[in-house]
Image (cartoon, rainbow, N blue to C red; front, top):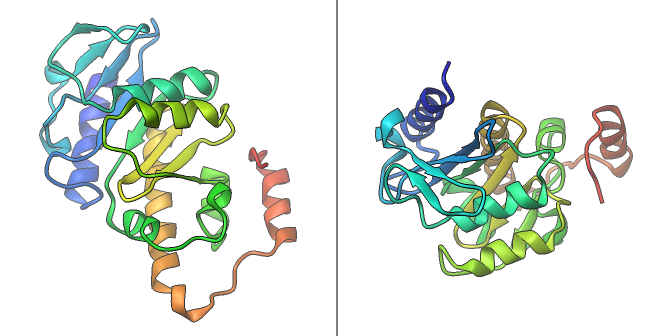
Length: 212
């Protein structure tokens, strides 16, 4: 399937399942020539069309299509800081992840609780970043400051940003983040049994997960 068609198909799937709403959220994928396909500003992920995607040059300029999402700087920050590991970026406003970001956390460097193996295998450690005005260049700077150590971050009071080597991998990882956040929220007052450090270490070693 053509990458443009794939991006539209995943956008529709995320929208239909309530992982983003209205005109929130944005997706991008890197083309073989280094340009980025990016969803347009003010457009619902449920109404994307292949010809309606923006094309962004490596220097950030618009090469074709409509005006892109205002979050282009945060997307580019991941492509630049994790160049060898990032072929796509998914930014959602999913409910449970955003809800969890409103609550106190124990460790901003490892924000998502270790409840299931899949959260660790697909996401590694998720970093909680401070609230910034949407579209602010400060978000991109926050990502650059991580020096490529995290494949997923949570923007406080805003939404998750997840990367992957392929668009499919990035979408699946974003879905895993939301599923784990839901488990964390639903069990927050119940003191759930988290994976132990030894169990986490085993997963990190076996599946070659970057871990600080």
